[in-house]
Image 1 (tube, rainbow, N blue to C red):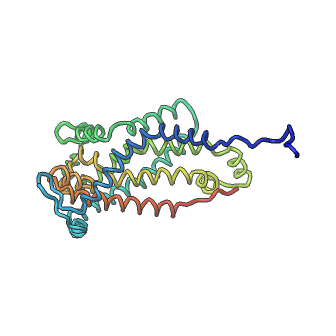
Image 2 (image 1 turned 180 degrees about the horizontal axis):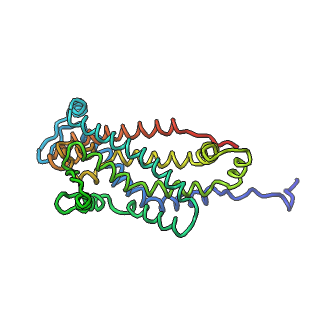
Length: 306
């Protein structure tokens, strides 16, 4: 009768229980974050979708199910289309102006000196300030009675307009403030990308006889494409959610000329308490932001070239 050899290999102990214990510990660590996301993000999103299908008005005992009636009413609402037009116009001009102006300034400030560092800080400071604070400050500066801007114009003999009460100037004024507020962010992001471009590439392009414009097209612009995509996308999404600036500067006036989609949503949901209709506005805005973001990502797709 043969017996197993003394040095026979033994089966390794299964690591499944140990792996299971590690997984259980991981779930315990992420559980607080999952709970917070579920309570404060996922649940409100689902609830707003459910409310958008009802005639949900605060104070009423029952909330009648109306299906897509809020959405069909919304698409026939002229005030919503006006708010969407204002939002799209603001977003387009601010996004383009912010990126173009930021790129021009970043190219001028690419050299690291004490002067450029000071200017970068000055440009970036408005970005870290609250939008409401920025709006209130500019509202006082543009006030026709006590505003500094109108006082300066009067000192040089120019009759200042009523910037925020003019139907033709209110939205352009808000757009200019929006660009001024956010251009610092674009400058910093583009500067970080510019500093990653190897100097050898510019030297090689110069030796090949490329001028400043050709060096920008062949070397600088390809290197900045990821940063330009990022800043454009952020500017677009932020612009489509325009609220704080118009709320603090114009309140949506004069005569709805600066009323954004989110401003209209606020009016319906938190002033008139029509939460079902406001939820429908929120979901339509979410769909618009999603579609625009996907289109930008598709159009601006780039490939790394060795």
